[in-house]
Length: 618
Image (cartoon, rainbow, N blue to C red; front, side):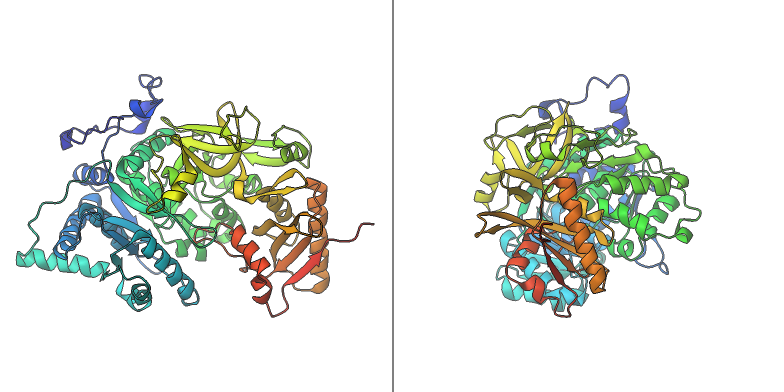
């Protein structure tokens, strides 16, 4: 790989990814890591370049409510604050390689602190702040776990959270410095005014240095720290830009949380690297009023805006006619859809709803990626219609994806082909390559792949083998195009037949009365029957006993008819009962554990929770 950190800083090419799609470059897209020529050796170098060459281009931060005002900072101003804050951290004694928790909401404070920690030689560890008082205890447990696993010595947050975060210090002995982000900036300005700035040179930061630790969402509440170097990041961002055909005409709009790879790498570092305008809003602002996301794209003529599939569902179900009035989404050319399984029904509903408002069907951009590969692994061709395959469920249970036209078929969305300089392969349990249409483990190789988990060599060995990353996902290939069918750990095996939890959940979500995105299927071992039995937990707003009984009956029937599987129990619960990650992913393992230890039932003593056993055969 060509990473020339000695190249004069003014010689970085002022080009865009679309230059690589021109006739002259069409045959020169990098096939291997050795062919990959990057514009910047580190994300810090990318920010410096954006500061020097960006002019008025920079970051626009939208207010958290409709009453506030948006704020804009150029990349030049942002970089000045980064350098000043980095000097302040050095003056306070930060050492090279020290891990620094960033517990901050979407804000300029977060952006400045993230890059300043890197510039001072530290390693940022982005974390999400407690969202509500009710979640403080669980948030502190999670933050304490991350702080301990990362051996973090610093925490940068806001003074408003100091009292809450004091609990981390009591649980984690190594955490010695708790500082407010805005105070760092203010003290840096004061030092500068008094001529007391730290005169030491900034440490040299190269491609092989850790850029940050990305702690995974964690289905069991015990996330692992993915080590990502600057080389990993700029490699992924570069080829992702090529895959999206980025140009200077693009504008990024994102509400995604900055402690998550899709929000931080996709929503922030990518526009910095490609020197694009960036428009950010709080995840809470989106969740409170999803129409604000669409309105931001309209107002700022956003061209690239990614989100998980559930966001597209909310944009249909929670945006009314009045909020859609006057909306123009014709500028939106890359509607990235990833971070969770892509539901074809959701995609169809979103396209049908917003096509009258200028949204082009070819703009929907289903992608596949994971934190262990920095961000993206596969992308489709921009402008191509979404490709959905219907496969026979009986063949699916046997590990084969056989296309069919039957109405009861399972459907999977194509998430594109491997990014340049990366490879994707499907293998069996022993690592042998499988043919097209055979379902197996998705493994990935390329310069974006992590070297492993921080301070966890055993877990690292489980995911890395001979240069290949075992993603934990199952899927199949068709002429290089990837279809993801589910998680290996969520595969349900009943009497030798394989059932994907996500497929069963989609069946149930299609039943009247069930909430979309709020169904979990899992298996538990039945000693009497000497086999697994399947349990489905489903959120619903149905409150009447007769209505609930009818809903459970519809669920039993739908799964039996569509998948040929007799589930053992249907459990109906109130909306908001199912545990999810901070990014909205279903936590199947945690739901299963709560089922087994009876805490799922105990949490609903008001009588709303109902358990229905499988109806007797007629």
